[in-house]
Image 1: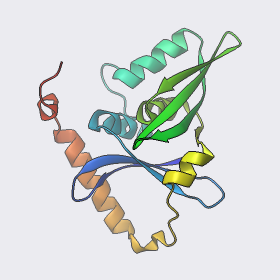
Image 2: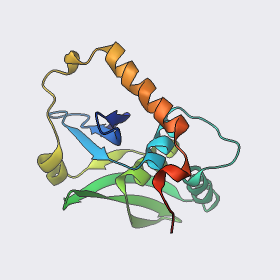
Image 3: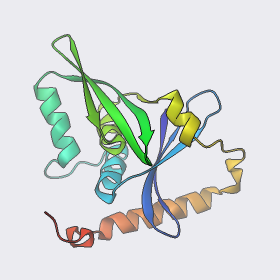
Image 4: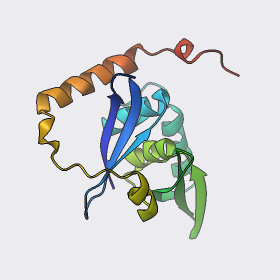
Length: 164
């Protein structure tokens, strides 16, 4: 899969991550994600360095320090409208499979240049064949991206309500 990026679905302004099959039908897999993960993926794609590590940056530093290699991230399942994923790590020659949210897996993948996959069953169920994506002009695409960037820059913890 290739990560096309993150964008806001209009008119709800819900962030979503778009993954596309690298071959075959080139189906697009839209996955709704939370705003912090959308911001993290965006920062990772743009290779933005922050003064103090954010959660996904911190996890990458921990993995590096432990000598772990991120082998792959796979969107494995879609159950009751929720996507599931697995992060595969290799540590001291042993493989470890860890369940994760697709957005967290992808946020780590963009920081570690790790391949992203999706199970065929997930693509069959939720993948969308985009027949003609030329209807979205580059200008419209840039406008959506700029709007998302403005949204991400203005979001605060209070926007998520009371935290437990």
